[in-house]
Image (cartoon, rainbow, N blue to C red; front, side, top):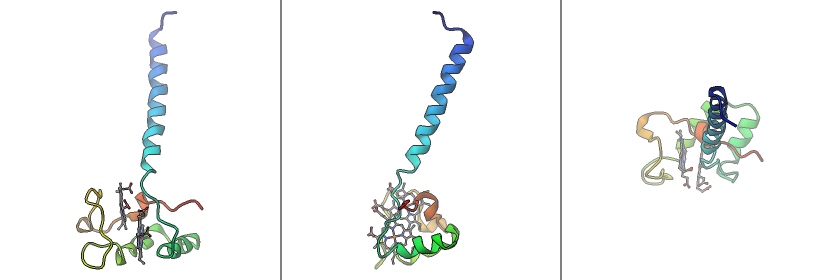
Length: 96
Ligand code: HEC
Ligand code: HEC
């Protein structure tokens, strides 16, 4: 069977769609917010309707650079110096 031009188009389309899923699934590999004593109140607040943007603003009370803070890994994609960080945009809540 000889592949016509439109068959190739279809094959490439399928590869592109699967590539897209793969790229999206890679994103959610970023570590999730731990469900522990330090973070439980954020789960509770979120489940009672708080917006992620409001909650983001509270993360730096523990997560900051310097003495007493929980430092970010060196390769962290954003730094506190870049301005307010949308933590929960990248670090998702666990689903249970
Ligand atoms: C009361 C202090 C405190 C606050 C507030 C806090 N964290 Fe944390 N966070 C910690 C501590 C301590 C750790 C390291 C130990 C652990 O995993 O709980 C940590 C670890 C993490 C980790 C890494 C988890 C892992 O698997 O390595 C992520 C992601 C995280 N926090 C996100 C957040 C986000 C997002 C917020 C704001 C919604 C937040 N934290 C607010 C104390 C805090
Ligand atoms: C643009 C996306 C992005 C944003 C915004 C972001 N992070 Fe991260 N963070 C990452 C990535 C990617 C890593 C690398 C390790 C991983 O897979 O979690 C990381 C790693 C971490 C770690 C170390 C996890 C570990 O144990 O290896 C902590 C703690 C953390 N982030 C907390 C935060 C907090 C708190 C905020 C908001 C102040 C924040 N992050 C904002 C993407 C992001």
